Image 1: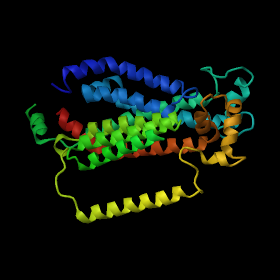
Image 2: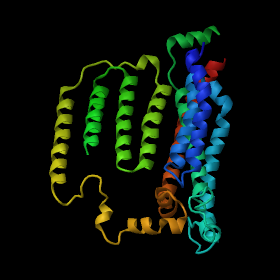
Image 3: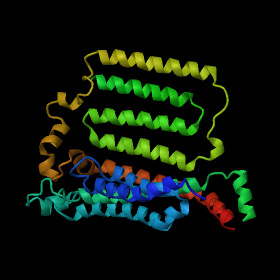
Image 4: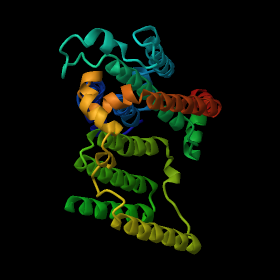
Length: 159
Length: 185
């Protein structure tokens, strides 16, 4: 049987969704409470890596394929740069200008609400997307390249 | 202040265990315990953002990365210690310890846990604390600093991470594809 024991598999199939929701919470409320894009992205990636450790690499790739992960990695970085460049078109024309806050949200009373702080939550979401995908990619690729034991190679030959 | 000494003793014991054990996985878990102690210290220093990042990277990232990538026959470390390297390490650590004590005894450094910028009248951090909520609208001032006032740093961080991931994937692609072909056929 591949993976770990039945106890670990059952518990991790319950816990994975809780870890995932907690990562989303850390990312979305990064501008109100401690947290942000980077820790939230690592928590999201660790929910997939828990699947990889408990079941197998194929099970984790079924939820989050490697092609999708590499696309998310590039899309996160691209959207981060694009949102930073969009500051050039508004207001004082500065790179990283927080135009959503200064042009639209400053007139309203948005303190301590979820939709506040302009582009800071969007930056958090993009960084979280990117960090989640890239950490998952790195750990999966590193675990692919580990040298196989002689017994495992014999198993492949027999199969 | 006593909690810091207790955490320091805990971290030193974990570091000694990490260097003395023969099993690679338990050594890495001891390093995770050191990171947990450091995260608790950041929490008591009123820096919860750094505490969350520390515990996520040091505990989750390190242990899971090592657990997912090591092989079973590489987990035990054998062989004797080099005597010269041990002596050099002990001397370097002792010198750093003595110099640190001498520096912290003088009045040039602020006391432990007090920010340096609190001593300067018109420092940048005063502007962040007094005007940050009005200018960015983010209740978490750390988030408003790293993503609004100092967003260039975050841009560099994202670029470094992106370049690292691309380089890792490109370097490791060929043997991983070869391993996949072996395991499929």
